[in-house]
Amino acid sequence: MLSGDKLALYPRVVMELGMGDGRLLGSLARADNRSLYIGIEIDETQCGEARSRLSAENIMLLHGSFEDFVPTLPDCSIDMFMAVLPDPGFIDRGRYNTWKPFYARLLSKLKRGGTFQLVTELTDDLLQPVSDDSYHEWTAWLMQTFASLGFTVAGLHDGAPPEYSTRCLDQFRGDTQRIRIVTMNLTKP
Ligand SMILES: C[S@@+](CC[C@H](N)C(=O)[O-])C[C@H]1O[C@@H](n2cnc3c(N)ncnc32)[C@H](O)[C@@H]1O
Image (tube, rainbow, N blue to C red):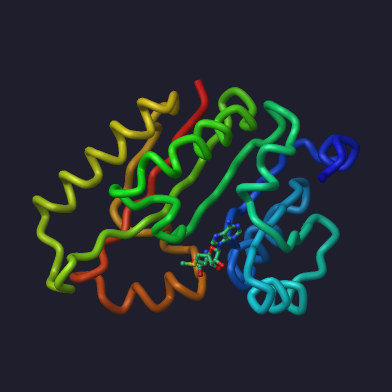
């Protein structure tokens, strides 16, 4: 469990869910040393890579499941959650009933006005290029889904933020026709 004391040391707290090898967390933390950056990753190898690349004072790395960890946070304690290309179990349309309670819980941990930034991708079942119609129908569904959980959709942008580099994003950017990415900024009213 993360103590309230550690959180209180920083005016702003950002948590990345499924940080992979931590390269994005590191670049964000380097550019903003007044905020605390917490990364959590369940895969031991990825977490080990993150530990070997990151040592800044304002970074905290956790090995474990965000499903277990997020509920232990104090309510209204986090300024920003980020999830870059979450696994299908946490965003697939067909598994909505499974992941819905997790994001409802996440919302309760955000400060008022805080943001959940979700970067996620759509692919075609047959790995054909994703049509504009499919993409727009999917983004409309995402917006409606997160609004129904209580988030406000503050922004929706095609693609990932250009300055972001992660292991998966760097691969997916090579196939923008068949892997359509959206970035959503979801705020707590
Ligand atoms: C598709 S990868 C994306 C990794 C990284 N964000 C990137 O863009 O390269 C999803 C990551 O989430 C991690 N993950 C999946 N379920 C998790 C959980 N319950 N708790 C923590 N990490 C999890 C996986 O181990 C994996 O590293």
